[in-house]
Image (cartoon, rainbow, N blue to C red; front, side, top):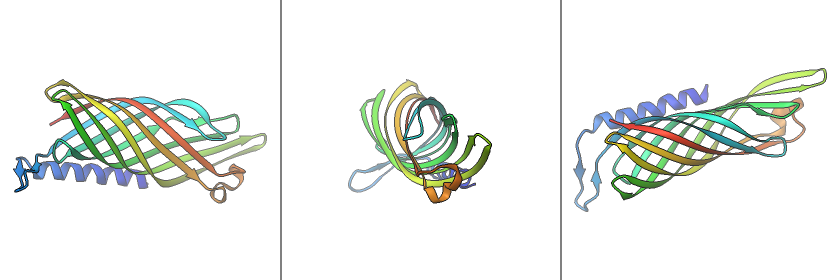
Length: 198
Protein backbone atom coordinates (compact mmCIF):
# COMPACT_ATOMS: atom_id res chain seq x y z
CA UNK A 1 0.00 0.00 0.00
CA UNK A 2 1.05 3.60 -0.52
CA UNK A 3 1.61 4.46 3.14
CA UNK A 4 3.71 1.35 3.84
CA UNK A 5 5.94 2.02 0.84
CA UNK A 6 6.29 5.69 1.78
CA UNK A 7 7.20 4.81 5.37
CA UNK A 8 9.88 2.35 4.28
CA UNK A 9 11.35 4.84 1.81
CA UNK A 10 11.37 7.58 4.45
CA UNK A 11 13.12 5.41 7.02
CA UNK A 12 15.62 4.17 4.44
CA UNK A 13 16.42 7.75 3.46
CA UNK A 14 16.94 8.80 7.06
CA UNK A 15 19.15 5.77 7.77
CA UNK A 16 21.32 6.18 4.69
CA UNK A 17 21.89 9.89 5.30
CA UNK A 18 22.84 9.31 8.92
CA UNK A 19 25.15 6.38 8.26
CA UNK A 20 26.87 8.07 5.33
CA UNK A 21 27.98 11.00 7.47
CA UNK A 22 29.71 10.38 10.77
CA UNK A 23 31.64 13.61 11.32
CA UNK A 24 31.01 17.35 11.32
CA UNK A 25 31.73 19.63 8.39
CA UNK A 26 31.69 23.41 8.36
CA UNK A 27 31.35 25.57 5.25
CA UNK A 28 33.16 28.84 4.60
CA UNK A 29 30.20 30.84 5.91
CA UNK A 30 30.20 28.95 9.24
CA UNK A 31 27.18 26.71 8.59
CA UNK A 32 27.94 23.46 10.44
CA UNK A 33 26.79 20.11 9.02
CA UNK A 34 26.55 17.79 12.03
CA UNK A 35 24.15 14.89 11.24
CA UNK A 36 22.54 12.65 13.84
CA UNK A 37 20.01 9.82 13.60
CA UNK A 38 17.13 9.15 16.01
CA UNK A 39 14.22 6.76 16.33
CA UNK A 40 11.21 6.96 18.59
CA UNK A 41 7.60 6.16 19.36
CA UNK A 42 4.66 8.01 20.81
CA UNK A 43 1.10 7.72 22.03
CA UNK A 44 -1.60 10.34 22.21
CA UNK A 45 -5.17 11.46 21.71
CA UNK A 46 -6.84 12.66 18.54
CA UNK A 47 -9.82 14.95 18.09
CA UNK A 48 -11.75 14.20 14.91
CA UNK A 49 -14.21 16.84 13.77
CA UNK A 50 -16.50 17.17 10.79
CA UNK A 51 -20.24 16.91 10.20
CA UNK A 52 -20.27 13.16 10.87
CA UNK A 53 -17.52 12.64 13.45
CA UNK A 54 -16.86 14.57 16.66
CA UNK A 55 -15.04 12.43 19.18
CA UNK A 56 -11.74 11.69 20.90
CA UNK A 57 -9.70 8.62 19.98
CA UNK A 58 -6.19 7.32 20.64
CA UNK A 59 -3.34 7.04 18.14
CA UNK A 60 0.12 5.43 18.07
CA UNK A 61 3.19 6.64 16.19
CA UNK A 62 6.65 5.34 15.26
CA UNK A 63 9.20 7.66 13.65
CA UNK A 64 12.79 8.17 12.53
CA UNK A 65 14.59 11.51 12.33
CA UNK A 66 17.78 12.61 10.64
CA UNK A 67 19.07 16.01 11.82
CA UNK A 68 21.48 17.80 9.48
CA UNK A 69 22.47 20.20 12.23
CA UNK A 70 20.87 21.51 15.43
CA UNK A 71 18.28 23.52 13.47
CA UNK A 72 17.13 21.45 10.46
CA UNK A 73 16.02 17.83 10.04
CA UNK A 74 13.73 15.39 8.26
CA UNK A 75 11.22 13.07 9.96
CA UNK A 76 9.55 9.97 8.52
CA UNK A 77 6.69 8.55 10.60
CA UNK A 78 3.93 5.95 10.61
CA UNK A 79 0.72 6.76 12.51
CA UNK A 80 -2.07 4.33 13.39
CA UNK A 81 -5.25 6.27 14.17
CA UNK A 82 -8.01 4.46 16.05
CA UNK A 83 -11.37 3.86 14.43
CA UNK A 84 -13.82 6.75 14.60
CA UNK A 85 -17.50 6.70 13.77
CA UNK A 86 -21.11 7.30 14.58
CA UNK A 87 -24.19 5.07 14.67
CA UNK A 88 -23.95 4.28 10.95
CA UNK A 89 -20.49 5.12 9.54
CA UNK A 90 -17.03 4.12 10.80
CA UNK A 91 -13.60 5.19 9.52
CA UNK A 92 -10.24 3.57 10.42
CA UNK A 93 -7.26 5.45 8.89
CA UNK A 94 -3.48 4.87 9.00
CA UNK A 95 -0.79 6.97 7.38
CA UNK A 96 2.87 7.65 6.67
CA UNK A 97 4.36 11.13 6.80
CA UNK A 98 7.52 12.84 5.62
CA UNK A 99 8.18 16.29 7.03
CA UNK A 100 10.77 19.02 7.47
CA UNK A 101 11.65 19.97 11.06
CA UNK A 102 12.87 23.46 12.02
CA UNK A 103 14.16 23.47 15.61
CA UNK A 104 15.16 26.35 17.88
CA UNK A 105 17.35 25.33 20.85
CA UNK A 106 16.55 27.33 23.99
CA UNK A 107 19.16 25.59 26.14
CA UNK A 108 21.17 22.37 26.04
CA UNK A 109 18.22 20.51 27.59
CA UNK A 110 15.23 22.21 25.97
CA UNK A 111 14.15 23.24 22.47
CA UNK A 112 11.01 24.09 20.51
CA UNK A 113 10.28 23.15 16.91
CA UNK A 114 7.82 23.35 14.04
CA UNK A 115 7.35 20.86 11.23
CA UNK A 116 5.32 20.35 8.10
CA UNK A 117 5.12 18.03 5.14
CA UNK A 118 3.06 15.38 3.39
CA UNK A 119 0.92 12.53 4.69
CA UNK A 120 -0.05 9.46 2.62
CA UNK A 121 -3.01 7.70 4.20
CA UNK A 122 -5.19 4.64 3.77
CA UNK A 123 -8.48 3.97 5.55
CA UNK A 124 -11.37 1.53 5.73
CA UNK A 125 -14.89 3.00 5.78
CA UNK A 126 -17.97 0.97 6.67
CA UNK A 127 -21.66 1.82 6.51
CA UNK A 128 -24.17 -0.13 8.64
CA UNK A 129 -27.69 1.24 8.27
CA UNK A 130 -30.61 -1.17 8.57
CA UNK A 131 -30.21 -3.88 5.92
CA UNK A 132 -27.22 -2.06 4.35
CA UNK A 133 -23.75 -3.27 5.39
CA UNK A 134 -21.11 -1.99 2.95
CA UNK A 135 -17.38 -1.39 3.38
CA UNK A 136 -14.63 -0.05 1.13
CA UNK A 137 -11.01 1.11 1.28
CA UNK A 138 -9.87 4.66 0.49
CA UNK A 139 -6.53 6.44 0.28
CA UNK A 140 -5.20 9.92 -0.33
CA UNK A 141 -2.42 12.39 0.37
CA UNK A 142 -2.66 15.65 2.28
CA UNK A 143 -0.31 18.19 3.83
CA UNK A 144 0.14 18.41 7.60
CA UNK A 145 1.86 20.64 10.15
CA UNK A 146 2.85 20.49 13.80
CA UNK A 147 4.64 22.15 16.71
CA UNK A 148 6.37 20.69 19.73
CA UNK A 149 8.91 20.85 22.53
CA UNK A 150 11.87 18.56 23.16
CA UNK A 151 13.23 17.94 26.67
CA UNK A 152 16.53 16.13 27.31
CA UNK A 153 16.05 13.25 29.80
CA UNK A 154 19.46 11.62 29.39
CA UNK A 155 22.45 11.84 27.06
CA UNK A 156 20.71 9.96 24.23
CA UNK A 157 17.06 10.12 25.33
CA UNK A 158 14.57 12.95 24.78
CA UNK A 159 10.93 13.52 25.67
CA UNK A 160 8.90 15.20 22.90
CA UNK A 161 5.46 16.73 23.42
CA UNK A 162 3.76 17.45 20.10
CA UNK A 163 0.62 18.86 18.56
CA UNK A 164 -0.09 17.99 14.90
CA UNK A 165 -2.94 18.80 12.51
CA UNK A 166 -3.93 16.34 9.77
CA UNK A 167 -6.75 16.29 7.26
CA UNK A 168 -8.64 13.47 5.53
CA UNK A 169 -10.68 14.21 2.42
CA UNK A 170 -12.91 11.74 0.54
CA UNK A 171 -15.13 13.06 -2.23
CA UNK A 172 -18.78 12.13 -2.52
CA UNK A 173 -18.06 10.52 -5.93
CA UNK A 174 -15.65 8.07 -4.28
CA UNK A 175 -17.99 7.28 -1.38
CA UNK A 176 -21.13 6.68 -3.48
CA UNK A 177 -23.61 4.74 -1.29
CA UNK A 178 -21.49 5.01 1.85
CA UNK A 179 -22.09 8.71 2.40
CA UNK A 180 -24.39 11.39 0.97
CA UNK A 181 -21.76 14.16 1.39
CA UNK A 182 -17.99 14.64 1.08
CA UNK A 183 -15.89 13.72 4.11
CA UNK A 184 -13.54 16.57 5.06
CA UNK A 185 -12.18 15.67 8.47
CA UNK A 186 -9.62 17.70 10.45
CA UNK A 187 -7.70 15.61 12.97
CA UNK A 188 -5.84 17.18 15.90
CA UNK A 189 -3.21 14.85 17.38
CA UNK A 190 -1.59 15.63 20.75
CA UNK A 191 1.10 13.10 21.70
CA UNK A 192 3.91 12.28 24.11
CA UNK A 193 6.96 10.67 22.50
CA UNK A 194 10.30 9.16 23.53
CA UNK A 195 13.19 9.65 21.12
CA UNK A 196 16.53 7.81 21.22
CA UNK A 197 19.51 9.34 19.41
CA UNK A 198 22.41 7.17 18.23
